[in-house]
Image (tube, rainbow, N blue to C red; front, side):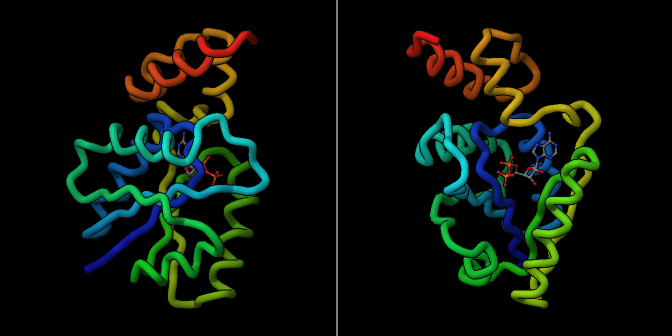
Amino acid sequence: MRIGICPGSFDPVTNGHVDIFERASKLVDKLIVAVLTNPNKHNLFTQEERVELIKASVAHIPNVEVDDGASGLLIDYAKSKNSFMIIRGLRALSDFEYEFQRALFSKYLDDDIETVFIMTNNKYSFVSSTGIRELARFQGRLDGLVPETVKKALEAKFADRSE
Ligand code: ADP
């Protein structure tokens, strides 16, 4: 069975991510969306919330599993899941530099695991979780950029705050 992993912090998941999951799911038998906790990032949504939001957003893709167990080195996680493929989305040139370095680190750690890139859908090329959080904070229009459940969760999150 060919197992691929889409890792990310998904804070929150966007339609750009979902588009990558849909396309990546066609390349493998099983796709694991791995929700990572990046110690350098302060997250808006907790790990559990991020997992639940992704689950609600990928219910229409049959071979996708959402996993929150991703901590430590991604390469060790991939091996523990018998996965040979790390799939990442690529937007503008600015993504390239970071992704290039990450892919080479992975290759250095394990030559058998390949990092594969899927080019962003033109419709979502400008969509980032950071941009979405900012838009939501100031009540910007989120329609079409995030799944409906995520939109509701963002509205609830910011309605709770007095910012
Ligand atoms: P990380 O926290 O690991 O940088 P993110 O959670 O922001 O990752 O995103 C996970 C993956 O999805 C990354 O490979 C990122 O490049 C990709 N991605 C994010 N937004 C988009 C988008 N709009 N189109 C395509 N790929 C995207």
